[in-house]
Image (cartoon, rainbow, N blue to C red; front, side):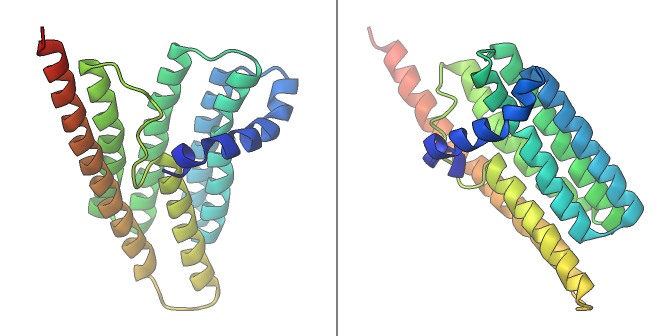
Length: 210
């Protein structure tokens, strides 16, 4: 929702941050893959150090780097359908690595599974619609899209780590945050599904009219 509503204001920021990557000649796909490697490294580090605060901060940085592939593509005039597909696939693997790590470190497999599948279904709802009819990739201003999910999860981890550092006994906080993430992501998947149903009915009526 955030990215869709203020895209014209966010894109110049990403393009400015992408300047070092453009200067060294990285391609969009290289940036996308580097983002996956960086997120995976941050997750592996979390398994080692166990600090939610460090994980939240480094994960936010890793996801920020991952967001630069589109900016690099625009600045180097290298936008492509294949690049967009690769980016979407890598995004799903990033989510898998992150939630598998959270589940492993904190022993919350059921909640992590619900949260992961909410994001996957949100993505699939739009992708499946595109198989049935031509759609715009930008006209889906839904409640809990990828940017919102990344920000929310990073903030929850940072707050959990801060509470831990202050000695507050709030081990439940991260679990509650992941549960809220799961509810919001599945609600967004439902929201997209309902929109897709309306679009498909309208499309079916249109093509069925002589």
